[in-house]
Image (cartoon, rainbow, N blue to C red; front, side):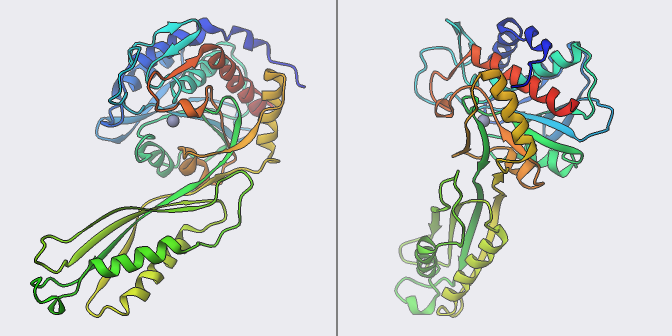
Length: 392
Ligand SMILES: [Zn+2]
């Protein structure tokens, strides 16, 4: 076990709890998707810690918050990323105020306390600790607080498209994992299929081209289809879910339009382009027996799986740092959910781990809460990992 850096002693309940409380008390529900207040709070707090912050406008008033502690440039940067938005509190009654940030016996309550403002606070305190200690770094330490993770990942997409991943050698995505290290999750491909027929009076169906019947044939084939894949030891198999369907206007008309959406979850090794091509081939095959029918298959959302090899040097470093803090080897596993790591690390094949406090089963629940001890522990982990990665 490696020796723990001395500056970790400065990371205590008093350094993380007030910040987490402020973040939880600042509404950033998505929907509707407005992170401006929490973004301003993050900017102010980092500014007061002497850290330069930039806003990356994503859409409308929504902006990623980015901070960078400069290294001497002799090695690649480390990215710490967590999202600013939370899901709304929902319809069910909470026993505590979702925006209260109330602390009861070492547990902090509120929407986002776990997913993922705890990780956000931990990363911010890690930056502050390293800045105050004036630790020289070889590579840059980059902090990214994204918008819109709980919907379409617009923040991660904007960061990726702006070239933000250039020079990044490894990434940590902050999401609830009970401090386990997650090194893989599935990707997704959302498809929309539209069939265009020809309208006619319902009493003379042979004069039209019914758009619903071929859609039915396509969806039945798709639901039975197995896209080629090799099982992944840490992940559930790929899945196909026929999600929505709309078609037809009136009972006495032949429907000339039908539209369906399909949610495909993929595992590493599957090509999304090949899945799209296969789906188009299935649709074309059906179209052959429907003269006058046109079919369009389009991708609505395309996020690759995330996978980092268990023996990747960055993962080995993270395991060593975590073991030294926890006193036991951390669990390496896959996650059922998708993260900003899909676009940021999956697309660029950057080694990444997902790690944060609290169990993912508590995410999006009523009375969401987090044990402050675990937030302190993860803050130490982010800090020690950054030092280990950026100083060796
Ligand atoms: Zn989250």
